[in-house]
Length: 546
Image 1: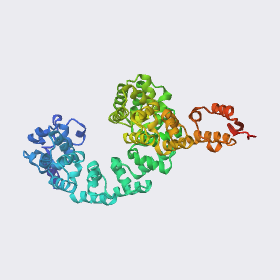
Image 2: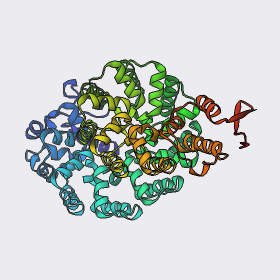
Image 3: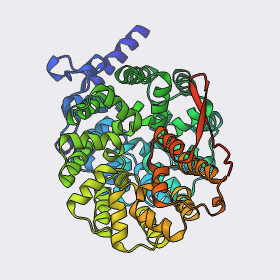
Image 4: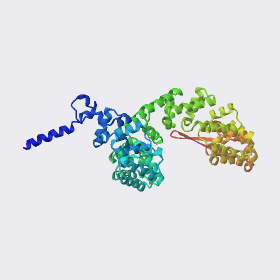
């Protein structure tokens, strides 16, 4: 009797399942899903298939991900499902709806979708474009309850000290923070980062925003990457912290990937440990670029500027950010400088080797604005501008227009210059606007005024502006003191004043020539003492018998 009941039950199950399981191969889905189950294409209504352009494989995936929805898919009014209507309302097109149907079919019949959408719009003040982008980026968000979503937002607000604007920005940038991590997991990772790197709330918030992979990285994985960077680059805790804060995405790369990039830079540029560490600390982003990307930029610079390996190495060591600029950006800057200043290959190479930041730190608009300022402010023609920039490229790459103007205004006021005199001085010494007012220009002008007299100093500086470029502590003052010492035995020592010619000698003569001049004209003598590889000279003037 029991056997008969069992046979009857099995027969009934076969009849019920007949519509879904077929023995003919033509009714099976020809893909990897057929190893688990088979679904007929007519299990989905014609309206549904036409609307979403569903293939056999799409239907199989939908059945696999939401088998309880199959009855819903067969209904002719399927397009009026609660979830479908809400997704259409927020602006998803047919292709986007098709992807949504295949990847998250359970949303299409869910009444929860409209409730979550309304909550997100109200809670985060989203416009239509922002809502649509968020749904496409992280459709799983629509499957969560409002309580779950709100609890995670409250957690982020509290632990990262976010205001409403910052919360909105963070969730828009990384909706996966709401979907992919539990509150306990989020809390443990945030606490680890804050403690391990001694982060304040602002730094912690920046790191969390910059690390989409936070949800996928365990604490052990994060720690192993930090330990690798510390050991491989010989970093102290402060340097590690600085590097990770500057480029949090480093913690998203695998250790093998980081090692391959470090090895490439070391080998390609013949770097020692100190140079490698300095380069990566200056530009941590280098370790986020692919080896192919780095090599292509080095090859471009080598070919475009006719560099040898030593010149390339020097340039990249000086400004590592060159390798983070795109080739298009580098080419556009090179073309601009070449055309704007009528440079040949040799002049271009010389300028860029002297100031590689010309190719990466400033926009073309910024460079052009500085050239226009110099042209207008100093009444330069194109030839004079070209000569000035070739001689002192720092004028257009290291100084702002405000700084340039402040230096010229200082010189004009301090030395009572007219426009012609200012122009002549800067054309004679194009690096003049690059000197610091407080530490160089003012002390040097004062030195000449004290040693020559006000009017004589002014005339000397105007006719010989290069004098402002010599070091006070290493050249001008020591030489003046020697000259003054040689005059102390003369009756006129108290009235000793530098003449124009003598001032010129103090400024321009090389050390050996100045020594010879002092001996020949002022009776100065010197003795030499050798200490290791260093030779020390001591100067003296014989006492006069008169």
